[in-house]
Length: 598
Image (tube, rainbow, N blue to C red; front, side, top):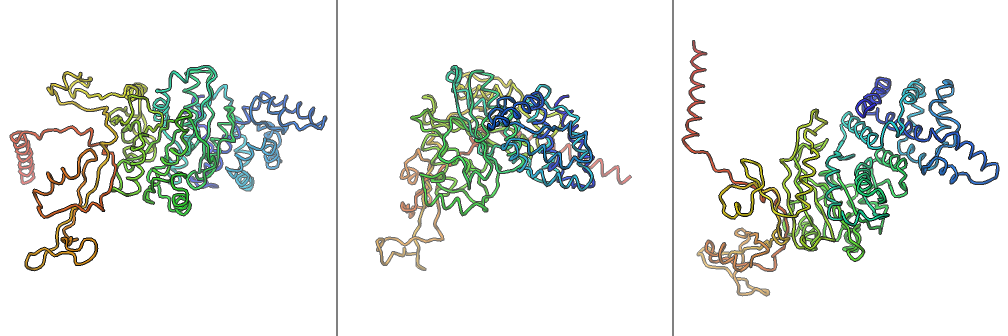
């Protein structure tokens, strides 16, 4: 049974729920039952051995837990004599027996079902006479890893969550990221460490503060184990949504990961892995979501802890908390002296440029760039995510930059690298092929400027570019970090009386000097790479000779105008061509009107 067939089969359970449940409530039943059946299948081969071991250890008055885990080969067990198929043999007592079976799981699994509030649904299904029918439906599908791989199971969960989120008008994109985007991010994360990651027995840590169902953690582990089977990736994560957390935790359990590292709660207001640092990090925080509900806690940490906390550089506007996650990840970076860290985060366009000099957003960008933490930004195609068609960007941030990247930032425009999906999924209409992922990874890995011939799509050589014989399309560009900085200067002009005479200050430290007219006040943004006085002499004084700069009000700002750096000028069409086109349209309209009047 392939992934699509499996999803359809599980989705068919909705037919049984229709009428007794609203569409938006289907997930409350289908998701926990899917997890239950998965765990049931995983433990089935060792069931007899576990029961035998339990009896043996209890007879000897020994706590059997550690022995039962050893028998299953997993970090969890179920010591009930029941399983889903045995439950089918006693229809009259399905209610009590299902509770008994779930209580037979080890504590970490029971916590998963508590997050689903599964007991509430069991009671409701029982009252509506549906419990046996639903349990029977799931007992008849085989979800053993031998037939349904962990990767397939992850895709099943993601598709189900997306469908349920659409039915309940929730934001599906808050739960998971398209797999091909994750593969690209993982490639970008590991490419500069390929040599180190091939060493036998190497152990590395990975963290996702918006873990969702665990897709990023899973793909990173698959990538590293494929590259080096002897490598070990210790995974950590935190997730706000209870259902997504429960699925992530179940997935980690089956894969043998330590689920104590997977936490439930709001990462920004309640960091449950305080003081910990990681080798690698990945995150796709929700786009443009306000943080008003946790504003009090965030502001308190910012004011009390400053740069010793997570939010020292500044706070973004309450309407978009994306940059809070960026700062949170920076605080989790392993110090450079201990090997450093690299992370990838998906953000929308707003964090690139929102906020004037001195604003929270600008100060956060300033901190990142002046500390030389930003390696690259990759612009993705639109329509890549399930819940939005907006432009998105992958930021690669590192405190262990290789020598050729020091004090530089690479911008890659991958917005044209996509293929159309055979079937749209929500707002997702485009996808990255394996070739696209490889091309983008290579562009990043080589860290060089790349331009394409607009006619052939082939890379242009340095000689052709230098000669300027062809209009070139930039794909990869390299900039010094200072290019993104500027100084906002305040340009003052004197107040004049009714006779046109300059009014002077009568007191204070500026006594006798021209009094500024607030109505004539203006600002100018001066590139950080340019002297303010030279700019002022050249750009301002020729137009307003009586102006001066109020240096006390000068502020430093940073923005990354991504699209501007990839703009290619297209000359307007010839006027004769436009006239001919207009005449053709006009003649067509006249002909149509003539036909109507006949």
